[in-house]
Image 1 (tube, rainbow, N blue to C red):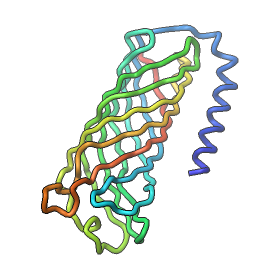
Image 2: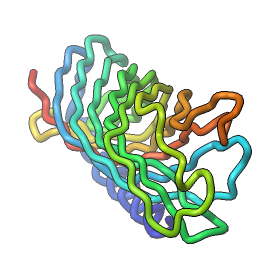
Image 3: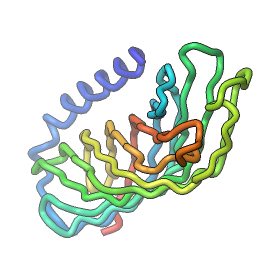
Amino acid sequence: MNRTLRILITLVLCAVVATARLSAQVNYSGNELAVGVKGGATMSLVTFSPGVNLDMKWGYFGGVVFRYSGEKNLGIQVEANFVQKGWQEADAPFGRTLSYIDVPVLSHFFFGKGVFRWIVNLGPQVSYMILDQSAGTASLPQHIEPVKNRFDYGVCGGTGFEINTRRGGIYQLEARFAYSFADFFDNSYAASFQQSSSMTLLLSGAVLFNCK
């Protein structure tokens, strides 16, 4: 994690230096259409009730992005991402990876008059689990409990910055937090867990290309 933070800080500093020289050269607002790809690392936890002692689980994600900005500082951003979530046990050598297709529909806010922009993305997302993988010796209820609900929904929000060169593309870094409302295990009164929902931090880079 420390290595990832150092890389992000280095990229931020490089971007600030580069855009300080370019920001006065480009001035535009509104009516932008862009498509591209994104990817990065995930750090996830699961909220269990009764509680389970967990460590953060690392994974990865990647997908495609569609963005339209019809106003000066406001647009809509829709994504389709393959995302690894799940948990790592703190008291046992066991981890479980739950892989989803996430589709966030986000309000996209951006601030800045030149090449450099600060961005904020916020909105709901829906998800569907496509893969359930385990590593380690299964012995406890959370190890062997079958997934009952593959459909998930929640909210997510993030902030970061981008370099928008118009003709040369859009280069973006973002940190985003996603919270799920649905439980993937059975949450009935007699079930092992009354809550089993995920929380995920996503650190991403994206490249988009302006279509208009």
